[in-house]
Image (cartoon, rainbow, N blue to C red; front, side, top):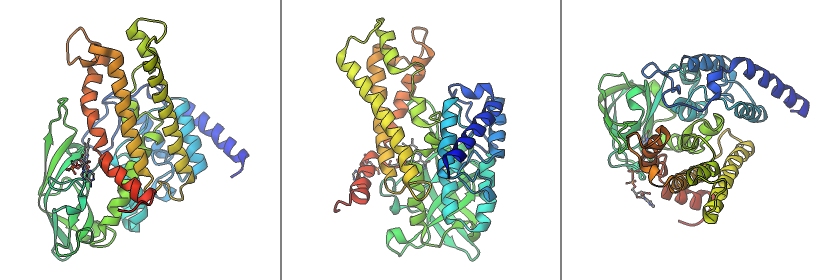
Length: 401
Ligand SMILES: Cc1cc2nc3c(=O)[nH]c(=O)nc-3n(C[C@H](O)[C@H](O)[C@H](O)COP(=O)(O)OP(=O)(O)OC[C@H]3O[C@@H](n4cnc5c(N)ncnc54)[C@H](O)[C@@H]3O)c2cc1C
């Protein structure tokens, strides 16, 4: 593509966004105003649906997916321009969730034509919310030890067992789920990848309450759930390769990149003013006198910049829309960055960082205190930091086992 084409696309995109992005969608994301799709959980802001509908019509909730499946059909250059223009106006993501960021890209690679046509346009429109049935009480880091079984019943499977830490299961319409279809085979070779409705008879969900009082994830139970074989993704007993590819999409952190930094952990931990200003505010001073703190704030800002640029470069350089094992680097660095940023905020706020309730704390201090407790989990979700380091050592650096 020539520079001239790029420039035309940039100007057209800018003009379109100017006209179509509602004012309230150009502000900091407010909890509860995001759209994760599906029928069961609604955003509290009507503008969020206007924004979703307009972006979905252009296919820009999934800008790089082919147009025949509802996507925007953008090449990488145009995709990066779109991201840039969205960031320029601080636009909120029109749609979040595991449909767009995980199962959609995986369906594009492994789905049959019928499966793609059935699921992808519904994901683009935000009609269906998905959840991830991977972890089990006895299978986390060692995921391939999973025991939820799917018995062959002719043209369907009968699924029984349980999954844990299923984020968003309470509001999800569909689940992508790893099951054991061959108990005799080596553990990586007896796994299949199934898709089924959370409203299927035999599915039940129990929320798990976290330290901060919220229940984003659940334990999910399957009691003889019938799943047609046509809802299996890829071949029987070859679900492990699909499962690994999906994790690369999850770990790429592209969901937060693609949504102009308005989604995901990086956005949620941001204080309402930059860290340096926050430090001056709490010290009641016009400069940061603590030189060590000053250094650390600058270091943290630089790490954030380097991280975002490296992510964008890796996408630009990769053949597929998501790079491969290098995504473990993003997952690891993002988790470490987020934890470091929160520690800095705690130091800056001092005792004001630990407000649970009451008039002596601002709303931001209280919500940050709760987020602090939740954020400890970021280096576990999507595979723990230790597991990411193992993958980086083996698959990126090629070190021996
Ligand atoms: C916020 C959040 C959301 C989640 N959402 C989902 C979801 O939607 N769906 C889903 O299926 N799962 C989800 N999970 C589960 C998550 O994938 C697992 O918690 C994670 O893979 C770790 O598994 P585990 O909890 O069983 O810990 P374990 O595997 O028991 O690990 C315990 C500790 O041992 C370390 N360890 C284990 N093996 C090794 C090794 N080989 N080398 C070095 N260290 C090792 C780990 O790093 C960890 O510190 C979520 C988790 C969190 C925290």
